[in-house]
Image (cartoon, rainbow, N blue to C red; front, side):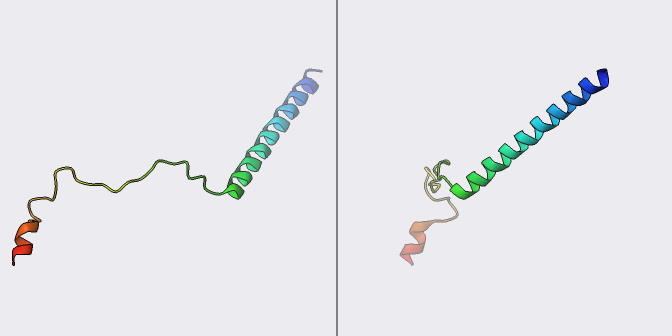
Length: 64
């Protein structure tokens, strides 16, 4: 009778795996329907705190 017990456990394990997979697919589908949430990080433009680099001499361009 050891084989029937192990068969039952295997079947239960497989059913649990399938249910978990089904639940995951449902969550993915719902997330896809909901669309983007906008809860990500705020992306801001980078501003150099030291000013323009030396090779871009802004003052010499305006004098000419």
